[in-house]
Image (cartoon, rainbow, N blue to C red; front, side, top):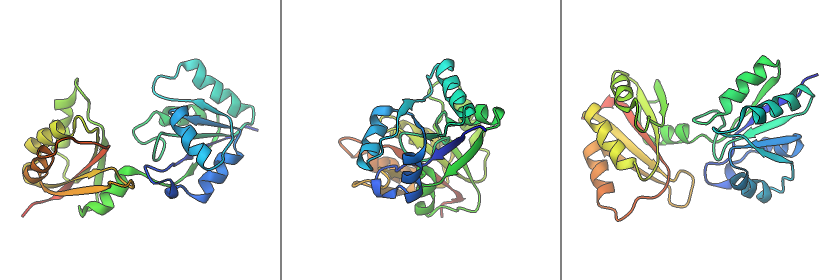
Length: 226
């Protein structure tokens, strides 16, 4: 009988956001596939999880991926975790999931923290319909994608890094000049912050800062500003 592949959500900042079920699962599986074994090692040590771990990320070689599938086919259980949040959201877990499904392996999600959803519900934006866009292309295809999302009449969710946040906000403002925006920074961490307003107001806020730190979620409300 094939093993089981668990998709385990991990904290996006505050370690207390992990679930009891997630901790138990990570202790019980035969192997943990981590996006970054060093970063995940901190989390696992904190919760006294001594399960063997291996790396699985965007640049994992085919033979590494096949090794994980082979273990599942041998009846072993494997948990997949990302650096933070829910695996499969803006990370390569979906590829492993599809290969596991082809091998008739049972997929079990262990829900928990997700930066995009946490930011959305706290932003004040309309939540009845939304589109998760994740990271925009850095170079090739960026403008094409911006033109495409500009046609979406729903609340939009983007991820962005601190060194590109101002550039991205300025570009988005050209495509959504009449929409409200929330820039969410350092979610669940000590310096968690929500900057809400028009694009002009949010951009001006960050331009005044001597430095910008932390990972961002950008929420563009589908409702036009008044």
